[in-house]
Image 1 (cartoon, rainbow, N blue to C red):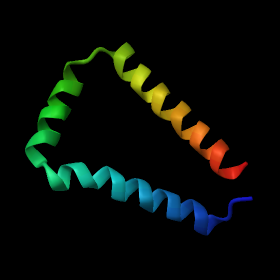
Image 2 (image 1 turned 90 degrees about the horizontal axis):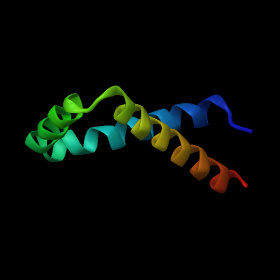
Image 3 (image 1 turned 45 degrees about the horizontal axis):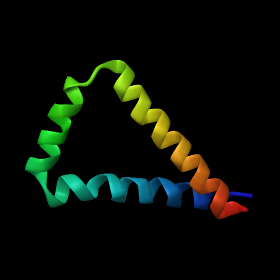
Length: 64
């Protein structure tokens, strides 16, 4: 079972990973964000769903 400390650790790791690309390549991050703004809602939802499912599969493998 996951306790609050584990949850906060997971949130902290997400923030670290989310910050790596804009820190390492601000111009590349800006281009990627501009391309994201050009996508339609269905494409963005697909990538969101893919991320959710990938995360759930990883959680399942790591906790089983």
